[in-house]
Length: 322
Ligand SMILES: Nc1nc2c(ncn2[C@@H]2O[C@H](COP(=O)(O)OP(=O)(O)OP(=O)(O)O)[C@@H](O)[C@H]2O)c(=O)[nH]1
Image (cartoon, rainbow, N blue to C red; front, side, top):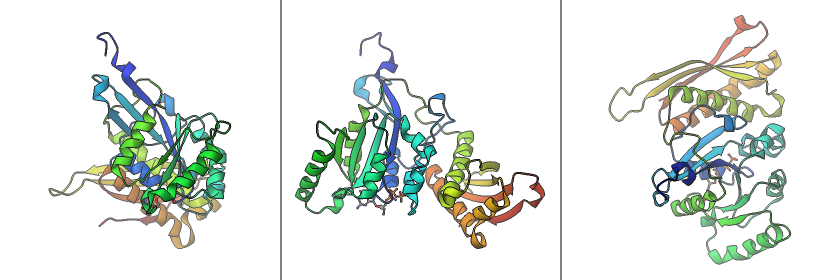
């Protein structure tokens, strides 16, 4: 690096979306790329349209001091759901907005398979953004030679000079550390040269609280489907941290959140039959927060109807931890 060059010129930073039909391995890939702990700060101007699910900053010492690439992974809720309605939901404009102006899209399929559902997801992606075809679960293909004809076919159908839909083809396994390294190296060049938006390793209380409300919100919409209006909100009423009681234990977060809806009907929808749905929202939120923040979580969820029903606020369910 020349002596007068600013470190920022050796930095890259950009938004990456991971999309694909359910069960192709998106969460596994995201976890492998981000690592176990999520580093997140408050929203920055550049990303107000996006919900950040993870950030990974990888220094490149050979580029000089401070050089490296920051990958900012954005959430694509509709693409990530485990339910059959996922594709319908993915048509939602909110979801499409989330991948409309990212720098790179990782389009995940299972190696050796390209189904109509995959084609549907692909058709929803903006044309002007580079898309990498991630042929995941390569370890399930026992003879590597078996994958070659399929890749050749994919190249012919989607990668030819007339139809360069995929910028690159990446056969890999999200469970293989070497493949993840290789994927980083491939992705890097698609992110613009600019300074990082986030500190390399920042994690604040405020951001954890933000992450908690975003996670409840995500589970809420994922588990209620299309019917619940996006005007429903989540308010964090309590966010308290207790240090570990003993060595080797994890800290505990006590969280209370209220889901605010507009109508009684929406409240019933959120609560579900015998409280099943809200219980699931709570359980999935707890599991995800425990994984993301490496702690124990105790979460209480309440549902409130916005218009003058404050007194009717019902404690629906509380969840413990072991
Ligand atoms: N053999 C193998 N299995 C994988 C790989 N990646 C993911 N899986 C498995 O595939 C299943 C689905 O993985 P997820 O990461 O939950 O998939 P997803 O696309 O996030 O699924 P949804 O949340 O339903 O959209 C899990 O059982 C994973 O363990 C891989 O590279 N190889």
